[in-house]
Image 1 (spheres, rainbow, N blue to C red):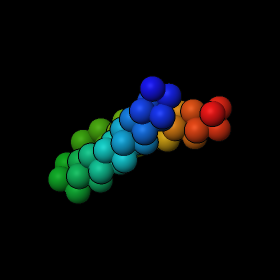
Image 2 (image 1 turned 45 degrees about the horizontal axis):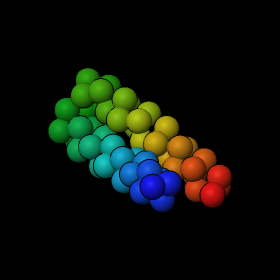
Image 3 (image 1 turned 60 degrees about the vertical axis):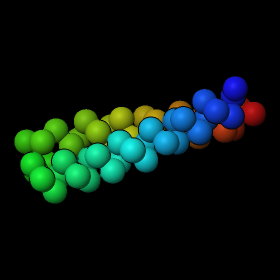
Image 4 (image 1 turned 90 degrees about the vertical axis):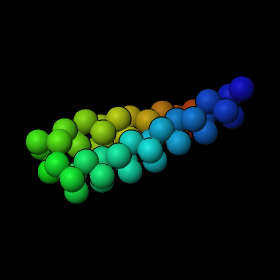
Length: 55
C-alpha cells in the first residue's frame, strides 16, 4: 500500500507538470493559471520524495 501511495504522488506530479505545460502554451502562463499546476506538481514531487525516504 505504501508503494502504491508513493507512485501515485509521482504520477500526480508528472501529470500536473504536463497540464501546466499545456495550459502555458494554450492560454498563457498567468492568465491560464499554469502556476497553480506547477505548485501542485512541486508539492506532489516533494511528497513522493518524502514517502520514498521513509521506507
